[in-house]
Image (cartoon, rainbow, N blue to C red; front, side):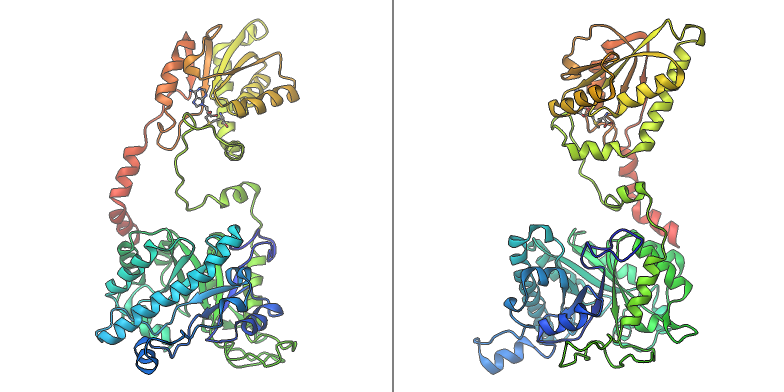
Length: 526
Ligand SMILES: C[S@@+](CC[C@H](N)C(=O)[O-])C[C@H]1O[C@@H](n2cnc3c(N)ncnc32)[C@H](O)[C@@H]1O
């Protein structure tokens, strides 16, 4: 999901720019109009007729009614539902309304619509496992500052939801005063009654939802933006979509839509965080040969006509902003998938790591350069220039994996002109296979001895001058490095050294940050 590599609109991944539409019960026509020739990749469309109210339908038809969804699940293929439709939950719902019937109607509708969306995505999950988690529903923004019942109900739904993301819609507003500056749009007039910073609203909502990983954000980008500090706070949040309203666009000298510098900065910042864009609203620019009227209402009966989509010039502008960005460096591309994700700590002693994990380690070139520098310094320190050809330093890499530290050590020896003998100790037999082929391929047979066993059980034939390891793990000890390295100390000569020579357990540091996070955030942003 999300934007592909920079340098062009990458079509290899679906869903990079969508369009918000109104209710249309002919889904295939809606898709055909908005996607096929118009350039959008997905629609954010209501799943249910907005006039539907459970209490009214029940009064009319008793219990034998059919829910007024936008088409049956069969009108689109499972992959079309998953890649091209984000279900928009009815915006009229208000689960914190004082009117009990309205509140009950809201809760029933919310559950029915999410159950329906989940039904659509469940088929997809079975048929197309790779689409897992691409399926999403857009929850309307809370209507009032106190939205505990809405959040409680969403939390309840999340507990039973395995195949879908919920995106809570929140307007990008700093304060109540901010919202008063903005024109009277439905959404804004709703949120202006909230009377508080929209980040606070999101924060209280997600806390009630216990920070559920399937709850993320859809941010409405309006014509006025909050301060840079206030915006910065959102970049630490799980924003999946930025909904850019047409009234946030200015008009350039040729009459085409464009964005202010601050809006441009915001949008490119979102691109950098793989946030998808959605365009919303009526076209407000009079461009020759382009039709006017609402994007949502403008479904021509003849969908095959070559008429330009009314929001096409807005889409082109967003595409232009994307293409204008500097392409990502190789390193940034590698890191992209790891941004903003908490990783489950690895257990390399208990488990045998997979090739993919080693490959990820090996891409961290900065780390291996630091090791190489440290080994260079150690070699120069231990072996004077005059004895460089007479003394062979014994170096042991304990936990050698597929060999990047062996390579760093041999490069250090070459760089310093020192003679080196390397023992590579590794307990993962699969990694040892790769290590063997690397040693052969590089012609290191004479200097590298591979030892396939747990370092704690190894009977080393000689003692080492330098012990090199990389077993820090997430908190400096989850790979059991203290225990393993303690077991390896017996290999070390009396005056031998260890690289790294020391490290601290960062657990308490992170615990402190975690416990003080609210205080730190308030200091940073107020
Ligand atoms: C974090 S990985 C680092 C691998 C490699 N040095 C690198 O940078 O890609 C740690 C390696 O140590 C190995 N290892 C962990 N405990 C070990 C032990 N007691 N004896 C031998 N190898 C061990 C693991 O199998 C794993 O390959």
